[in-house]
Length: 71
Image (cartoon, rainbow, N blue to C red):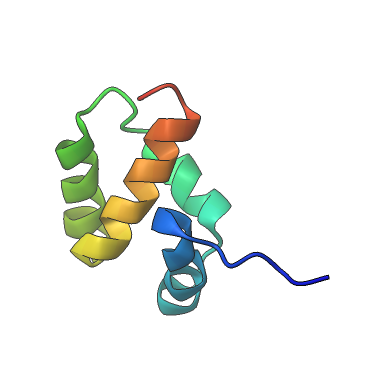
């Protein structure tokens, strides 16, 4: 049995966890605080308030919104 390679935004998750020292579940809870904002406002929130790089922030926001009905 071979493991299927993760593709898309979730492929960033191991790097995000290593770089910022928090599990993805932590970042999903952080984003829940700004669920009513637009995609780019949420990205800016992670970049400005949590010093996250654009690519990592965008990946987390994309998954957060897809798993929460576009929140």
